[in-house]
Image (cartoon, rainbow, N blue to C red):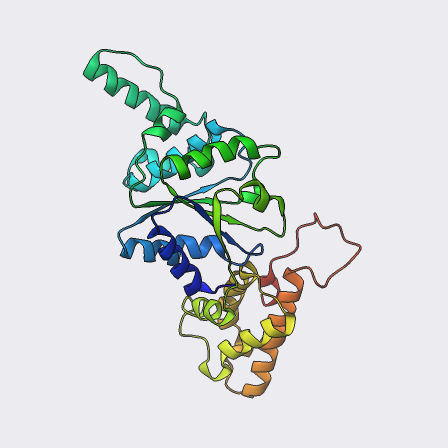
Length: 304
């Protein structure tokens, strides 16, 4: 098991290894794997002159779909963010094999080739993906457990070619507890596995960095948050980020800011609200007879 720095160090060590294999970062749903990759790992790689491309495997069933997502992800990273085509296309359109963005890319490349050579060719997303260079670039394949059913043979063949054939550095992200078959399906190319166990102290500090200074320091919000998480045994980072909005709302509450109310009373109220919200948002309390598909109210409603 590794915390934030452990994951960063392991990935940096992996990209420096000349052997051709993939690695896997596992962790429970909501523990913050994707956030860690997109922020801390991306920054660490950039400091070492490496790039990072992340692609979700959610629902991917064919090589064409995977190629389209890879091409779109690489294009988004190199395309200036102010270009109209970047701003207008939604992520699902960018990642769709038949999306307008992919079609436009193929047409532009075909037109350029015809203009230079006079030869008309019919390009595919697979051809574009094959033309990509992967020097100093890590490919992160997220949501491995959410790939399409019965797609393992197709995806393994393509990913194995990237790893062993082209030497691409690939990091899988998955919740192996949800789908234990992912380990066996890709075992041949995955030589390293590391489980991400986030430090709650680090996550709480990250939350507090996004709060303004209006929160009373006398209430020791950091200790209250850590105590609430310890009491509820909740380690889901998504639930923690939901609390960030609630904490911002609490800053404006007269009960919280009223210096005439004893500090111990305000602090106890704050911790009770935090614990209640964690229990409720993680479905540990509530009406057991209520259907799980009924949308639960926002936790901000507890304090508004």
